[in-house]
Length: 314
Image (tube, rainbow, N blue to C red; front, side):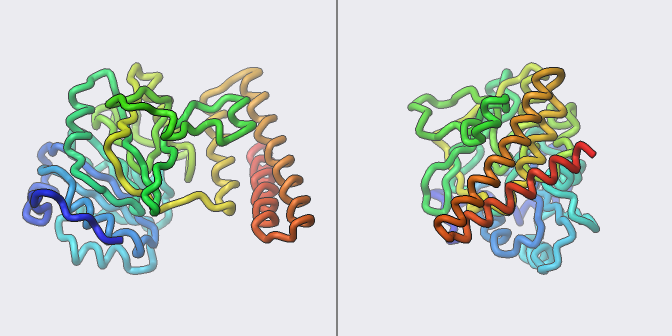
């Protein structure tokens, strides 16, 4: 996880410890949510040290980690503003707790398993100079430096039937500076601080998954747009694993309940239930035929998702 050296030496955040913790307004507040993230947290903070603009406040919220990661970070990076929770609040709750301490005119939600690869001042400047936009993201690379989908379309019955159709491939975009999108991924989500506060941050009915989609829907409903800037990049180590499928489905179910009504609500619920059942049956059968553990794992996760939906209706 080597951090690329910046072309020019940036202003050190550690030299601005008073600024970062002060109550006066800053240019940018970066919100980090940590839960036993020792493997990734240090490199992430190093990249922030390299590429965050001056007058940046960095707030690390810790969700009751037990790996010593937050203590180590506090010692090595004295410019960190650390906020602790005595329980795991999830992504939404953690960011909201961190956000209560934000003093920046812009707020950046940034996963701890990411690396900034270049100065992000141009990202902040772009949002500042485009007042019709409320939030944005930039091009997301995986650990192999391959662009991955980080934008998408709002859920509908058809898109819920094939979840991948909610995502927009980075190859779909051309050479323009920016593109209008429905939603942007929360691993790098820059938003105007006044809008963040007006919307009361993330909806804590989401524990993990779809809270970023929900936020972007509320941004759209408030009269703003979301943008994707493909020529600026960051790296995101994280990836989706089958065991998280129930969390993803529950997040989408929460979105459906919050933003849909009448026949559309009933149809989308039916699609989620049917999709989990059919997915469980498909992977169970394929697991028997091919004797592959990954198929059995996906079948189990799909059935767990179906059970979670049943429990929501109880």
